[in-house]
Image (tube, rainbow, N blue to C red; front, side, top):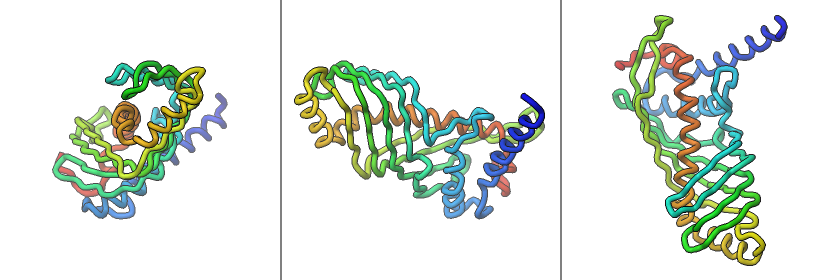
Length: 242
């Protein structure tokens, strides 16, 4: 890599870090109103990602290889997938109580890709492969995140995530489009798909948990990486008793 190219990459990375260090704006206190506004502003920057620093893009989020085994014995292989919509989430609230941040978001999310599935979904035997599209409208994500502070080798104090809990629920509906659910039987495949969409909440209870958990794990990975990069005094400008 030549010097000119290295300098360009360095400047780009620094500019991205600088934008992230402005998370505390448009206000400086820790009130619920300020935290909510700040998170709403920061979230699209966060999900944009900084690959050079090990922070993946979360919107779009590439799902190269995802294997799931659901409780009912249904196996799902998901390939060439892409998830979108996280950057447009609406922050309902964010509040800090002691060392715990509580927040809630509403999002419209779409996942598309190639699938292969074998087993039983509710009452239906499934043996299919094809294209898949899942759209979640107005999904609610509620999270509790507990932090502590630690001093790293540079002498700066950083935040560390010590526990997290994210729950989801559906204030909108989920729609499914999957081709070839039953190999060689398009008529029955369409009937099963109609049932899935007419009973979307029941199906979401089977499928939704593992998919949401997969997405949350990606967010947590990015968050932990971010916290090792930006000192606590760049995150907030008021004292934190952590």
